[in-house]
Length: 213
Image (cartoon, rainbow, N blue to C red; front, side):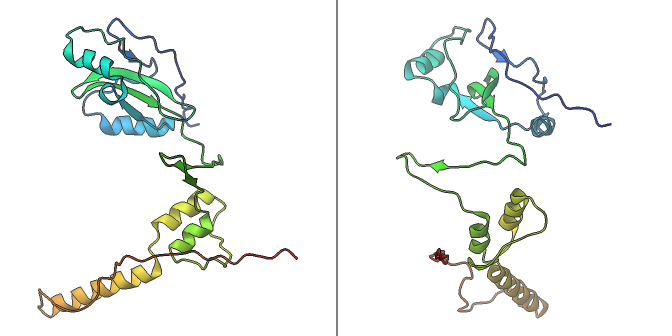
């Protein structure tokens, strides 16, 4: 039986006499344990967010930190990112100043999400559907039925994102083939009027609307 993974849970932020804090279940990673730390974060299903005193704190608090020699930094209350589920893992001094590390639990693979990217002025656009992403990659026409192997929409979107559009793949192959043939012929430089295959274009999606009978 595989060993059951104990997931780290939110804990009260009890700071020490210097204003520092470390979650009691956070492993003591040493300098150079970067890969080990990444593996632990992935195993826990966490998403880390670093908060700097210099950019997070009010001006008077930041000035107090940089201008005073007092060892206690408890006067800084770190903010937290937008959204729910964040909790504090640590508050520490570093070579780059005072930092707080917060994280939420990553959603489960089968958890359905509605993600919105909102601009500073409050406007937002709905995310692309899986079919629209495939159409943008020129893998299907917008009016076609799309069904890939497996039943995971997340896996579909990942595969679509990693795919190379057919037209781009053909252009890349032509350039590679031409380069190999020229190299075989001993040519190391070629000046031609061949257009660059990556060009700025305007793309519009047109999806036929079904009329309700």
